[in-house]
Length: 489
Image (cartoon, rainbow, N blue to C red; front, side):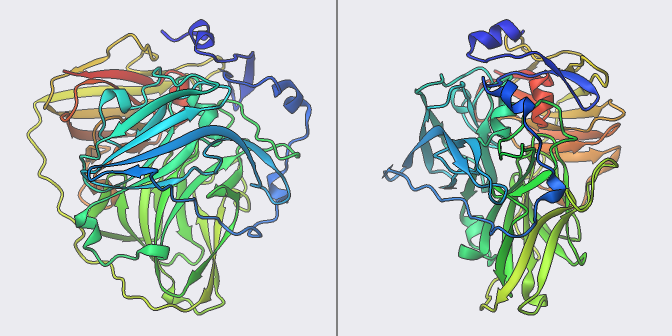
């Protein structure tokens, strides 16, 4: 089992136990500056002036070398300082100095090779979330890149259909803080199926990373595992409550929830239509017309908004309806402001049919999984009653098998979600009801479970043999032990 001692051997600076949100949780990976931070005054999120900063677009990374089959990239993990809250500078852990990290645009069946150099003071392990990759490039929780200049080369074969993926740190006991401090980036995988559609493209196809954060008055991030009640500054592409200028036409927004724990229920202030065209594993079979798009930590939503219904000069907010009783709608209920500043030609459209998903195979194995965390001080988190042990295989799977997994959240207060490495899955049922419409009809790799909920999933384990993890993608819960190993052989 990974203990405090083994974490220290991996290069983690462990601190004492701190109280967070009704439970006592171990804080790992704290820096030497932590005592000074604790004495500083905390920033009042309600006092931050909203919609004064322009939302930036993350930089698109270009390969340094390409062949007929492969694109080669380099990234450096390093500290950087950015203005997130207006007028304040925030130290961060970044990919290439950008926050959020860069965008990689990849193509199905064309390899991407990335050399990661870790110049941070903590070890890391980079996981391409949602990707079908060999074990040695999956970013296993203990397959670490050493701190202080260590390197690792990851190979992504991209032998899967188009998908909106993202990459982040996955070093066990460290992923929670490393991601909180900035280690995320976007990976857009496309193919001919997607390219043939007349969807908004180019400057009208915009990736947006959403999350929350907590700050001191001097701009420094405050990290304590499990303190979701204090993480109440909402960020879009690395800025606190920014605005984004749009033309009076259709836009495609590729939304990723990179929060440690926050769920978003996104809607426009006037409750007008949002057209969800995709989810984790790419496009849905058909567009889903709604006024609320829901994404839990780690999930993605591909959404088209038609701003042609608004005259130039209109200002419209993107809001969050998932607000806890202890939270303010004037704070966490606001996300991003759109400003319609011009007209522009629009030849894009959203077809009634987007793609055809492969037929579901015949499942030969059924399994059950219980997700639970202690809802009391001093708690841990479990899958099927066990905390994560890197040396234990929890689930043995035959290569090529199609299985049905029934996953249950047995907590009465805490939400969870379920993320599976290596494969995309299909959601068959939610709370005993067949899933026949909406965003869960697509290919998924992360699925939310509010307290007491149950989902039934189907996946086929093919492509690569090896050991991979499945876990709660609320990073704090995974770091507390809500993770397990599966071996495909």
